[in-house]
Amino acid sequence: MARLYDIVDFLEKYLGVKNFANVDIVINGLEVEGREEVKKAIFAVSLTRHIVNKAVEYGADAIFLHHGILTKGTRGAELPCNIIQGKFKEILKTILAHDISVFAYHLPLDAHPEIGNNVTIASLLGLKDIEWIPEDKCPPIGIVGILDPPMKVEEVLNIVKEKINPKAVLLNHGPEVIRRVAVVSGAGGDYVRRFRKGEIDLLVTGEVKEQHEVYAINEEINIIVAGHYHTEVFGIRNLSKLVKDRFSIDTLFVESCQMV
Image (cartoon, rainbow, N blue to C red):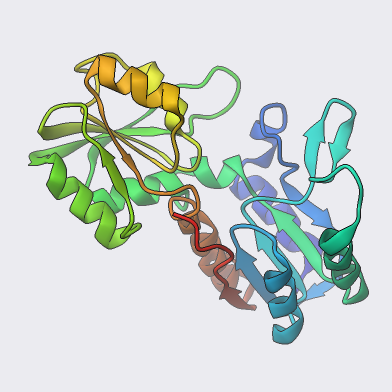
């Protein structure tokens, strides 16, 4: 069991939440205040009615998310809809009726150097000599690392399919032999435009747009598209273990999507 605000304070410092305040669309940290004590918690990438129902069934005092339910618009905090209606209204009613807290950690879980999505993916790929891709207004999020020894691009794809997403797709527009790899989870396709031919051999990311592939074709850079959801399960899973070990509470990770 742990006090709610002990968890809030610890994670705000550990994840460096304040460093992302001016750049992240998600309001990171505690989004909905529930019970003062937390004995059980559910962890998921995104909030769905199934996640809320599972939280009630599990007797959870808190739900921890990667994609939160409060975002920042031009007028400050906004919900991810214009009107609280339909299923979202029912979801909020259930959360409030059962006094469940809701936490969200978006960019802090992409960027964290110990439990983050990108550092975990880099480890799964066996990347060495890790460097962070610089950012102007917040801590770095994406990673560049080295495959030593180098591998054929199809071999890297097989590792991604085995360890991240069996439906991962290779956009084969670069060298056959891969040495320098960039990793940016989620909607990280635009990061390909930070590199020129020869600066990286491969970008591993969650999703891309047409213009990203066009750029990759022209600059001869491979892209492995491993799915937004599938590249962002790692941080929240790691957070589940951290919270369990740190605060001696029962935690459960629940799949929220089946997307590629």
